[in-house]
Picture 1 (cartoon, rainbow, N blue to C red):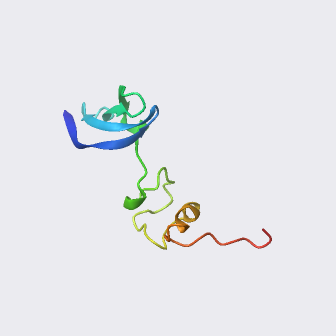
Picture 2: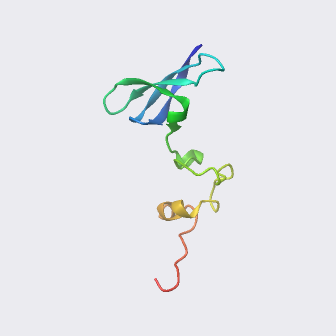
Picture 3: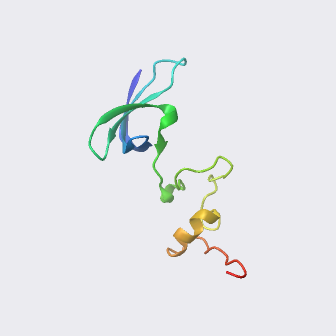
Length: 103
């Protein structure tokens, strides 16, 4: 089965960022295959499901590659993990990281 994605999805791939336009499903015995056109050079590549990731989008609570131990389902002001707090503090989102004594 081939599914055309409408709208296309912005994806991270091993070859860089691109837009996923098609999803190929050969059956339950095979990985899903994503047909992606790369931003850098327009090349068309097919990647197995395990090799692609959605691009980050802070507005949707998807800051990028995250550990499975973090729960981003409740992402919002006050729930921002420490590694993202400093980047967002200048925008008034969350709180700046606490300073450590002696630094």
